[in-house]
Image (tube, rainbow, N blue to C red):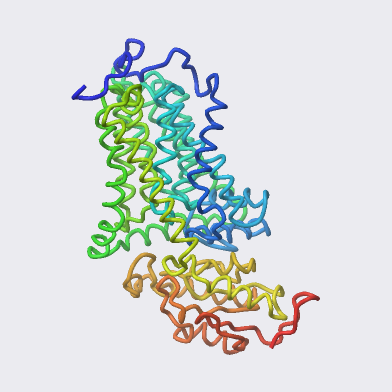
Length: 537
């Protein structure tokens, strides 16, 4: 088997383009599929339980949670609060809040439902046979065995894999990819995934390649028709979302934050030096960690069959291209690669782990075990022991929130955070006083991930400053936090250096306290927010 693992009947039912099938294979669901899903749920929970109780694993979680709370208060995304992420992530977090407050229900929903669903999709790709079991387990283990800041956070890249995995299942073999309803369903699923994160669109061309290859013996008109259905399905969810927001009077902000703002952000790519540094710190370790999966995928290419091998290769290629967007190389950009890697590695793993397993199989299992144990221990140390590695673990968030809760005016009005620290919103549970949950490049030139404080200076918008001051004047925050002194998230823009904002604060606010170098200002003349509030200074 030097040229690749030859699984049982690698040509399936006689067609070189079809995936090998098991005797009990059928559709997406088979006998025992529910038990398999439960197995995946148990494994997903165990591999991700280490950070289950952490308030914020990644800063983006605080943004999504704050936005979700605003949605539940009746706020409209992109108008009452703004972030350059699609709307379904806020809907997902809001749905989790119906089960309980904070990140715990979000993490439970994700580990017990969303992540097992992705693993279940990997299993369904192989019609739930032995390869499907290994594909699901490989995804669950490897996708939890890296930097918890990225792979254990409930971020958009993970959420979009739910519909994306089902899109791959819809076109898993040549016979499926030749069916018009399957092409339409795949397009709808990718379009839905785009409403979690735009990089999901990268799977569209990969699926189009699968449709073209499957129809190479059909007439060109039929193939074009299936491609048209794939494209129509892809466009329908984003257009429907735009129509919904247009009906709410937010059509223009929806387009701006989801398209215009993101294009400007992506165009400001990291510098060559920063890209090289991140490649050494993140990309190279990721490739080393997943090396057995790449090797096993190469060995499995023939056992997969022509169609599935081409689909897996295309998914890998386009996921890799999407991860390079902006050259920032955040590790969570690599998450979509885990799914096609699991598919690619599954045939070799299923064949090689039969008794008695050989040296390569034992090394594969040992690598996975050491990787998972090592990163689980490291993530526990970085989040549960240290508080000076990640900004999200800084004690200032809990201490400032505790100080505000002691104040007589706490609960009377909203909060405004001047900085790159939305964790103050989640810790205090106070509503934001501005649509800008993150004060970014359009206000001060701050570009996430860049060490150059003026990286986005040319993108500072006077219109956005007008929006900010309008929000503050209308919502009248009870407290203003200036985080520049704490340097949270490398934020180094003192409030007093921004004349319009400094004038607003000077006219209506008084210094209340300084906690962990965070300056707290309180609105003059505020009243007690609750009857049991202790007297403040």
